[in-house]
Length: 390
Image 1 (cartoon, one colour):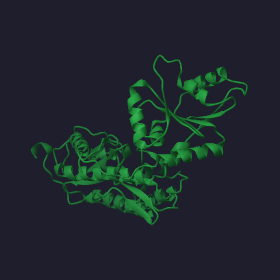
Image 2 (spheres, rainbow, N blue to C red):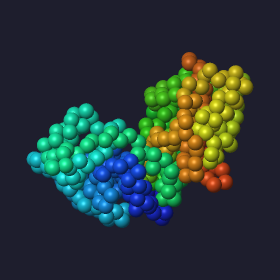
Image 3 (tube, helix red, strand yellow):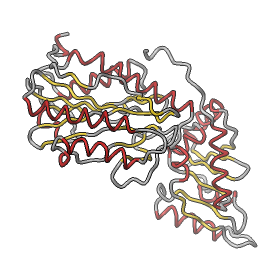
């Protein structure tokens, strides 16, 4: 696996996605949906530009972007096999997005706007344009829409699963190639940089998120930023990392021992390992996300550490690193075949350290398939050579 060899992965079914959102429009009695959230735009069309909107009606698909992407949008639509009209809006063009939308709706049409990703000023602009362009049927009606496309994105198709699996394999390979350099004297930020380079070298287009590398007391901070602090003997090293491939993210956390651990640290590791194993084993279609979260907390409670688990058990991944469903105490979600979720219990003891272990897990017809396969823990202690001495 390297950046020079591109894998042959299953294609993604963009036609099925358009059909699914049109079915939702029909059921909600909406004539046109204006998709503005970039991951939703990409999911529907394959277009990856930073400025893009999609207008979906019962019969047509229109992509609106600016001149910077005129060539790119045509190429990416063709590569995805998506038949769509392209509207190019130039900086001096009077035809702003709202005016283009107004042209797609007839008097009295119901036009859905993704309310989670537009501003109040944009909503007001749409309202003004609809009123100014109203025909005999009166102005079109704006309908706030929340989460329609995101709901459809929850269940991954074969092409998405292939990309998530490949992104996970890149992260596994990168960690294996770098772990020999973990040892006293190496800094957190050096490890983060080496992991980023290794993932790029293995074929990632980028890291999935800023890599967390935290040792010693820093590991008690769930979202610690890598520092110039060197690792020392007797510390726990927590690494939360992922790769992004063709837009899809992997997510994995592993904990390492730097030298020998004391008994209390070993108990933290044993507890989190048992909780994470129980959580993964609970993943199955028809199981509530809340039940998986509860199972992890029950195991940590048996070790007397439940109070030190301060975040949810997991989340879905895909075109975004945090998607629905969420695995938490408040979740109402039920897992289904095609969901890909993380299971990542942890314990964090301020001033002393922390442990987290995380896998990305696919829900399958027969149960589950972990996508991240790196060894969970090394309790024998890591005493590698600093990178600059390799």
